[in-house]
Amino acid sequence: MPSSDVSRRLARQIIDQDIDSLNGLNAVGEYTIARPEGSPANLKATYAAMLEQRQIEVEKLAVYRAAVDAARQAEWEFHNAVLAMKGMVLGQFGPDSDQVQAIGLKKKSNRKRPTRQKAQSA
Image (cartoon, rainbow, N blue to C red; front, top):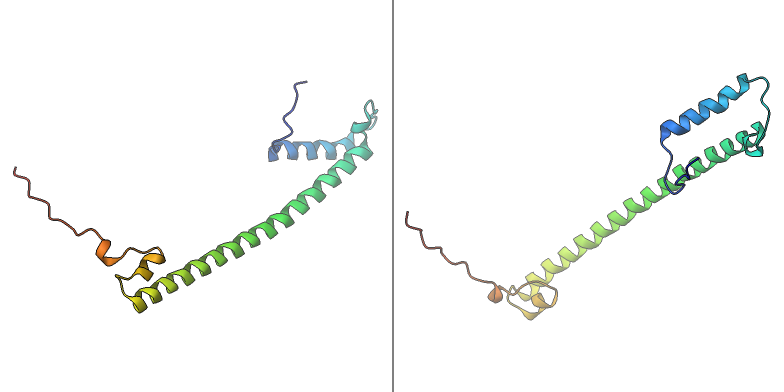
């Protein structure tokens, strides 16, 4: 049997087939246990553990998504506050002041003037 890569998730189809196989085990009358991990008790315990871990995963995903939403909202609030500050500094000190340059904007006098392009002859 080839070694399995346990670092990746199993496809939903494989898990569904495994659950169907576990449910079908009830129809097998004379099932002899050669390996302890294949016993009905162990199968039921590992199935219950899988369901529990899936539930924990869903709960943590919900918490994660809420944290992502809260962080995104905080980022936007911060960004809007910085834009308001820039507007106030620009209005208070003028577009050509050192204070405007100190907050990361360009002074009006440092902007490159637009130049006309010569018409190309055809």
